[in-house]
Image (cartoon, rainbow, N blue to C red):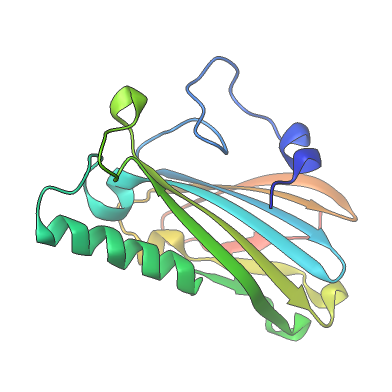
Length: 169
């Protein structure tokens, strides 16, 4: 599920190495949110170093387990909490770890990309999201969240303990 309109509308750093959603920056996760009644589509990109502490194919059973844990954590989507009044449910989730297979990725980077679709019974009540990536993955220092809703587009940066993303411009 790729959102061409979303990706075209969001600012990205020209000339930087792009990994699906934007530049690969340790300590920084990227989250894109698109709200189109009744669906909420979410894409994330998370550097492998921030999720598991390394960016190479696993060399031990402990490293393989770390990749599996991070994948399962992202698959469960507990890090993203839509406003309770919107009655949203997770309809689908797809997590893709890059650079942890048999060969290293070009540039030596590894990351986790994920796509989610939520359906909301009351999308008009979806005024905010709690994005808890930095809580679940403590190495994440900053989360850049880009949103597109019927009201317009916005970009917010979460740092430290902040988790709230306002969906109303």
